[in-house]
Image (cartoon, rainbow, N blue to C red; front, side, top):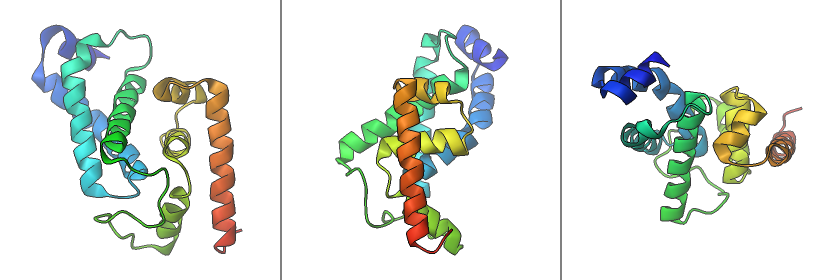
Amino acid sequence: MLLVSRVMLLDDRRAFAALVEQHQPAIRRFFLHQTMGDEMLSDDLAQETFIKLYYSIKQFKGLSHFSTWLYRIAYNVFQDYLRRNKATESSDSIPEGATTPHCDTQMDINRAMQQLNPTERATITLYYIEDRKVEDVASILQLPVGTVKSHLSRGRNKLAEFLKNNGYE
């Protein structure tokens, strides 16, 4: 929180660089899951997120954890990307330019994640991969807690069904 305060009050660019360094791996990982492993797109979206953060950090009121607020910015960046590109909610193939996983299991998980719509994928990613609380996920996605729980349940069921149909128990 000290870094956030230094950036907000003093426009300290070194503190901002440290803030980016601290949060970039998680934001990049979030985008990698949303883009089905497309590293270049994930890097671009992460960069856009931190640019938006830089210009809007003075609007942070501290009503939630800073990381929750940052994930909200990242989620909005991803939603803007989907709107700009009129992306469909699910796809049958890994996006062009995506890194080909070296491991069959990772490839199957990526294909399983493709079965989810963007909101379910974001919910699963934030809850299971980023280890966020349901309440944080609800705040980030601006959804009621019950809706987040429904997305988690549907997402788990879709993932389990896909993996079961592809040889996993």
